[in-house]
Picture (tube, rainbow, N blue to C red):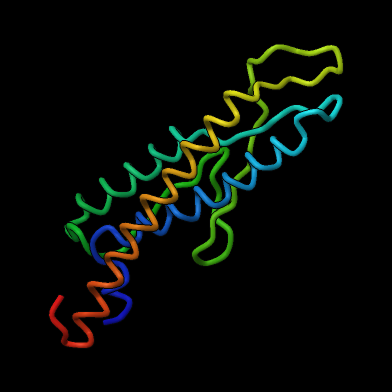
Length: 146
């Protein structure tokens, strides 16, 4: 029963979004930390690819007859892999079209900072929505009014 409650509604999608945004934040922070490193090529994972994976998983779940409950299965891609039972592993690729500087570093600080802010926003929204879902669940289990 607890597994059914944890897999109900948007909770699995929100948890996957949190894992993705957290792992991507580490990649972006690594890019910022090495911004002035000679020969450094920044890497990233496509958020659009993740959104496609998430949309496919939600659509598969809906069409499987479970509606908003049931197993939440998502497909792997070149950049988004499974790691363990519920884990997520990102395999970033170097794809920056920025200017190649004299130290052979391909950097774009403004774009990297924009990616960081957008990713942090995704994490914040997903964590707020998930916290709200867990609060409702706690209230229902504790038989309290909200």
